[in-house]
Image (cartoon, rainbow over all chains, first blue to last red; front, side):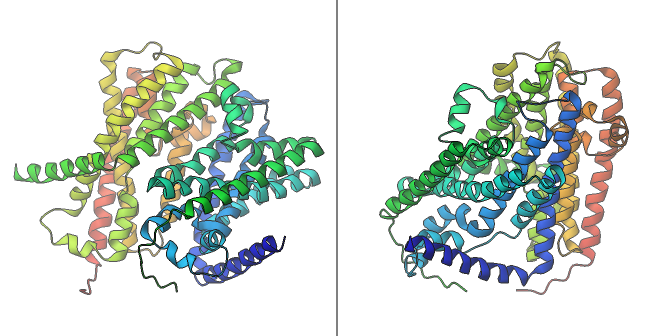
Length: 265
Length: 263
């Protein structure tokens, strides 16, 4: 419990430092965040056209449901990137030997590694989700609660997926391909109604590709709350993150330093 | 002759580079498969109610295979490269080399595009056949006209991206232009055919260049008609001319104001 508290404290400190650094470049920060939000907004247009063509539901989802999964995917992705932006650079950091710097630090290596960078543009992703929710779901308390919970769970799961994919670098030498595409693959399964997929793909979405746990189960809970389903969601997310964490440290034992000298400013 | 040999060498080098970076190719192919698979599932669910806006499911899947093929085929770093060259100042070193900067960039990108179109084209055909079978009413003899339109779409996309990249000469941050352009291409044809849009948007879109990048060629390939060909190809040629003029205008304007400080 104390370790978890320390980790949260460390994440908070990194967040403050990264935010202060981002604020030094306000115009660039605002431009990138706005650009990302605008980019996401085009998909609302796409879905509006799709639903206006057929009316009713697509894969069991209506327009508001689709907006929920879009908002949640966007905000969870934004939150994970604001806090853990280095998750996309783990392979580069391992391969170039930059990892040495993190090994020398007195805090948790994985957390320091993940938190030491933030992505400015993803503030746009985070805020876009909130705006979309406000426009499509108004002040429905349960939906907002599941949305906020979903951001935390989805953000952690996305980070865990990226960490797991990049950790293969310790074993294979360079897993940048898997690392680069793993999360984007999963996001592709998050932003479309679950009902459009069948059999095997649905099973994958509940296990290896945990898209169902990132957005579709929170949506089910928002529609009709079931405590048992919530417990399953929390347990799965905790287990997935725990396995990713342990997998990283298991791989780390195989790391060999290249004695690279780096200065972190 | 010397001119052609010089730039064909650049195309060859670019092709060789594309073969060397195999993991990038593999990643792109996997993405392409996932995109098509997801869209196939989505449109299959939508088409449970029958035919939508004049397209059958089979035509719709082939349409998406074609638009994504053009999107992946067009994929180049030209915008980012222009930006970097201008902002880092490395363009100053390229200006006194024995080639024209714009033609050099075009030749280099063209090699990558040839490679992409071959690889993704083969994959598009395989995926389309597996998912929905052959295109209904497809005539092989008309395919060259669709390909011609696709080449025009790719070229006009390239020159617009180049022109937008060259705005870096005068603007500190031009990313917003790129994002807006990219999204307009997405919305006006790449993910959904123009025929699905409300009438007033269609009428405006037909006068703008964005639909002519993916919609026009994909529509010609999946449901060719001479009427459509006569409508869209002149518009593509017109916009291609505009984009080339725009890019060379931006280049000349930018180079005139360029200040090199050595180093």
